[in-house]
Length: 257
Ligand code: ARG
Image 1 (cartoon, rainbow, N blue to C red):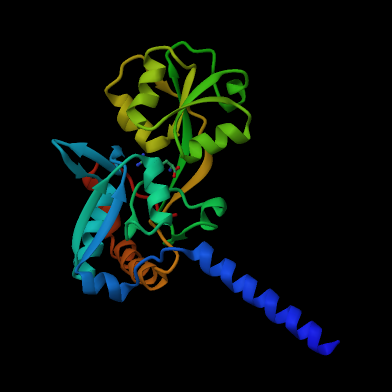
Image 2: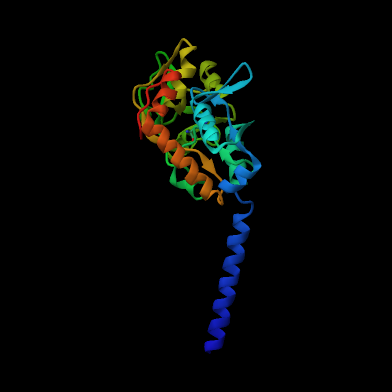
């Protein structure tokens, strides 16, 4: 009897280990591997000012400045790969890139699939409508159609709240859906809304902010030592006032989370 139990136990352990191994799949780079490669390859969706945005074909923004400093400290070259936000999340889980830098909100659901640094900033969701809209807050979104960027926490929020959404891979298209009257509202992170609406007369950001959006950099499992090193660098940047300066350089006020 004892023998049978130990065989069953051994088999269970074995199957468990196989599953764990299979689900790990590709592994994220360690700090040592990144240093050895001499470069940090980041995935970003540069449609998210002031954090990452394309200006004359160059990716610029608050997070780009932060990660540039991180690379300086690590003494590696920064390599930027551009893609849709959706692909950033999928790609980082598959360890196709070393680090995802994309205004990513750290939340419990995502933590099941990837590693995160300690959040360096707290944003929120907001609602953008056309001037004169009857929508005055989140409660009014019921029964309305809302545009969101695919794969974002804005989409998660609307789906949870059973609000009808139209998803767009590019943030600009989610905004255009509102300007062209294809949707009643656009749900997006507050700082980005402010930047993208600046240029667009006739759009209004509602005062009511909702949800907490702690921004962090994401990594594939296996990158624990890399996360630890980047965490320490970012912590120093916050403590020395350098973080505040980077935000100020982009016209934003920094509030530590
Ligand atoms: N903070 C939101 C999220 O994590 C939106 C991020 C969108 N980022 C971007 N680069 N377009 O889902």
